[in-house]
Image (cartoon, rainbow, N blue to C red; front, side, top):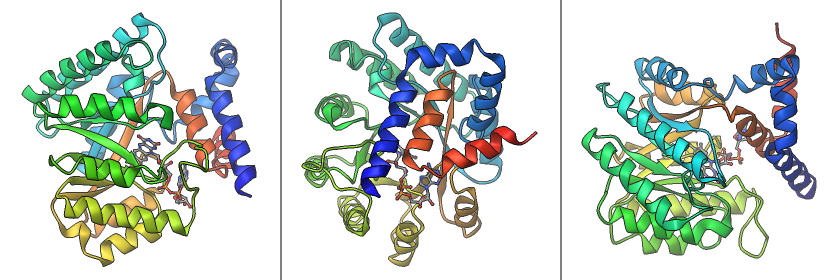
Length: 310
Ligand code: FAD
């Protein structure tokens, strides 16, 4: 079953990256509108104002929010500059609100595939702007081939900007050591299982062994005194975190993706636990939809149901 799931996930991710398919969808209004309907479960809309409106709705209900402008693996300079400009506009719009969302992004959206110095400069410009607006920035973690570069850029920036956080993936065997290496500062950490198909030599697949490792990493991060987002929809892990009393610390919160297990985030919020919802917006919603289906195949059926709903 694991092999089948891997094959399905990798097929979905190849579909997500095919520029010709994307163009075909954009040029076929009926198809575009169908897929857009399926994506609406996970993506707030195409524009910044869609993300900001959803942020307000959720904050009114007592949730904290992260906002991502969708995009990754940008390979031309103009697209990187455009992504940087959009994130800067987002920070600027957020700065006018009393309680702002956290801003999340992939370093490969703002230049990682082109030039590390450019990426660093982009990150610092955003960090400087966000610092004055009292807004937190968070860097997502991408596939393992990029982990060293992402961590190096993060660590360099975090020396001067403590309001930048980093995402770590429990599925990677290296993560325990990466966490130890971050112990000298009080970094902000988001712990996820990991969304990428990685070789068995460097990772472990979804399993009870991975869940045990996830819990050990939470314990390690709490002991190291980090601000920690426990970013999972796995109810068995969430129950265990509550049972062990970790969530009572003001430094720890749950974080879940918009549209995934809203029943669970609602239950945790109603019980008074700190819950952050991760919102996305942007024209690349098709990519994001494919990722959500890849990581959880039953979402394909959900997408068909959403498309057929009037
Ligand atoms: P799983 O074991 O995958 O799922 C547990 C249960 O959750 C499932 O049985 C199901 O009930 C539910 N569930 C999980 N996924 C879905 C879904 N797509 N649709 C419906 N139900 C689902 N990954 C990265 O590699 N890098 C990142 O930077 C990153 N950032 C993230 C930020 C946040 C806030 C979150 C919540 C996740 C992020 N992820 C990231 C994705 C993460 O790595 C996992 O792929 C994703 O969270 C699913 O894993 P899980 O922990 O929920 O556990």
